[in-house]
Each structure stands twice: as structure tokens, then as C-alpha cells.
Image 1 (cartoon, rainbow, N blue to C red):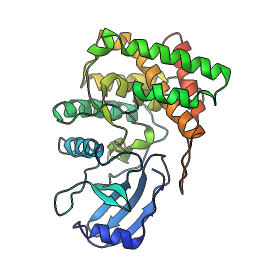
Image 2: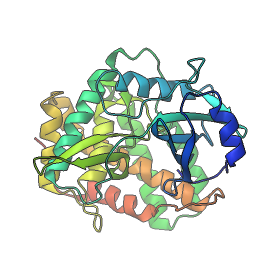
Image 3: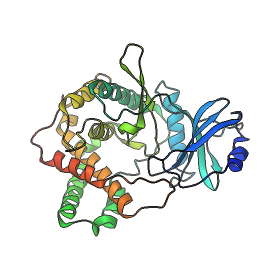
Amino acid sequence: MAVFTSVSPAQLAQWLDRHDLGAVLDFRGISSGIENTNYFLTTERGEFVLTLFEKLTAEQLPFYLQLMRHLAHHGVPVPDPVPDRDDAILGELNGKPAAIVTKLSGRSQLAPNAEHCAQVGAMLARMHLAGRDFPLHQPNLRSLPWWREAAPAVHDFLSAPERALLDSEMAHQSAFFASGDYAALPEGPCHCDLFRDNVLFDDGADGHPRLGGFFDFYFAGCDKWLFDLAVTVNDWCSDLATGALDEERTLAMLRAYQTVVPLGAVEASHWRDMLRAGALRFWLSRLYDFHLPRSAEMLQPHDPGHFERILRQRIEVASMPWL
């Protein structure tokens, strides 16, 4: 969500003429993230987020925006796209596809405990169920086909041990994805990037945290639900220094998820494979962004070493938490 494309006050005013949002009270860029240009927008009608899409095309974007609208209208707390006077939720601003969505309340919880993890797990399961009747289909664009493109692009930047790890894990995941067990796993629309900074919490009146919602769906795609859960666990339940799973947080998330969506023997037998798949996906994308960066006014590439540690830990550890 770095600012790749600047928007002047005049450009913003002209674009907002198509919306019934009232006068602009505040407009400022969001510095975190690395894919799209995002601005906080406050008008007389409320608080919103304006996004200009740097990579996704106008042909790809209806999936993401319509998925958010679908989930929001099915009781899942996510940003709801704001239509213009012609009921269009996607436009063009400064030469880029653009959209406005409602802004959720709360703040990111970057040091989660088991209670936070349980709420995220339960809501993730509710999101998976709510997406079952979503009519559009788009694959996860950062799954195995993209890994096969990205791995050769970063290969020459890696040390010999890193190259060996990458080659070995690519072979492992290719075999797993081709298996009958993989094909049998439940699937549907997934967030695919549900990190700590993509979830908001409020302070509840009873002193307990209250989940405010999930956001940043622009890596979403149709994938295995277990992959989505593994990606989420890898971030929310890992020790940041070592990559090791925290058992209390992991069990809290898994148990809360399975109270909504039961997890069976096939999921259990391939839990390690999916945790490794989730780690490989983000190790590769961070390697790509770190070694082959794009320019931006505000850009903070993430450390690839974090997910290398997670991947090695998932491969080497003798056992890991499961239900």
C-alpha cells in the first residue's frame, strides 16, 4: 500500500464528482505495504480508503471488489466498495483503475494473544462459508504457477544454501499440488494474505478485544481453505525471532476455526505441507520484491529472511500443534 501514483487535490475533486460523498475533509497517503497506492479519505459522509491499483488490471479487479461486497453483505466485517452514481464500484483515476471502500474501525494488533487468534480463526471460517455461493472465480495469482515464474527470477541472487532450499521446496510442493489428497481439500474464495496488519481490533466494553474486520483483499483468490488457514497461522502464531509456532496461539486459532468449519484427517495429514506452502509463497514474494524492487514514494520492502526461517522451521521441527 505504498504511494506509487500521486493524486492531486484537483484530480481527486474531479473524480469524486461522480460520488455522493460530500466535501473532502482529509486526504493522505498510506505508507505501509508494497502492492497498491492507498489513501485515507475523509469526507462529510464518513471515512473511506481510496485505492489505485498498480498491478491488477480492470479485467481482474471485479473479482476482488465483488467478493468484498458479497462478504460485507453476508455479515463478514470487510471493507464495502462504494458505488458511484451509476452504481459502478470501479473507475479510473490518474490513468490507474481505482475504487473507494468503507474504512473499518479499530487498529492492527501486532502482538496478538490467544484470544485475538481465536477470533481471527472463527471469522476466517465464517468468511470461507460465506464465499461458497460467490459466483465469480479467479485463482490465487500467487500460487504454484507464479512460484514457478518467480523462482528462476530470484535464483541468481541467492546463496547456495538458499538455492538448495528453494529447489527442494519447489519440488516438494509440485508433488503435493499434484496429489489426490490436495485435490480433495475444500476450496473457495480465500483472503490469502491475512497477516496481523490486515486485521483490525477494537477494545470491547467488557475489556476483551473485539474484531473490527479483515481488509486488503487484493491478493485474494480461489484456493484451498487449508492454505488460507496456514498462511494466517504462519503469521499470527509464529515467534517473530525464530519462526517457531506458539502452541497456545496456534491451538486457539485452529480450535476456533474448526468450531465453524470442521477439520478432518486429510487436513491433519497435510497440515505441515500447507504451512510449508504458505511459507514458500511469502519467502518467494519477499525475495522478488527485495531483489527486483519497483520505485515508490513510500516503500518498505519486507525482510525475506523471516519467511526463510519459518520455512526451515516447518520442515525441520519434529512436531507442530494440531487439534
